[in-house]
Length: 188
Image (cartoon, rainbow, N blue to C red):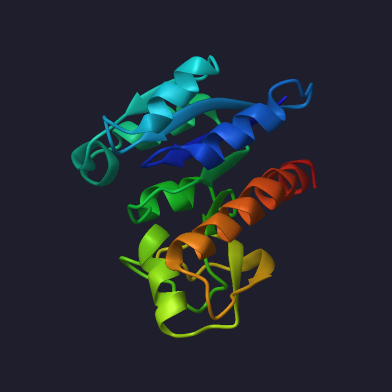
């Protein structure tokens, strides 16, 4: 059985989509959700779907080995960042080389980096009058949004689109592609 651990910071729609996708699979399971936000809706979503979920603070993540030790105990085949906003510590990346991936709501290298997430990305795409945008699934390295690209999917941005319109299109791309890419990676 292949094991996935998901990190999320917010509502958890991508986490829920992944959990649901792998729920009845015999060879892959989402075994845990970890969050840096004790009030994140992802905790409720995980509970509703009977997946273990824990929140942690910055000290446990970056200054001690608490989160690393949780991961070592769970021994995941893949760590998936699904709307997780903190930079990943090198100690975890070294322990799980090429096993940490992220989804980003833009076509990297455009609109990546610290502070570029969610509505901030969509607002920038609209403000810059981009003709297309999309999602990027990539490996995580020591820098925000700079790891090797695994997959990208594109969508049109119309001149009349608002940031909310773009967000809806990105959400559709995430829901359609993220589970399939994770599945092909873990079963590769």
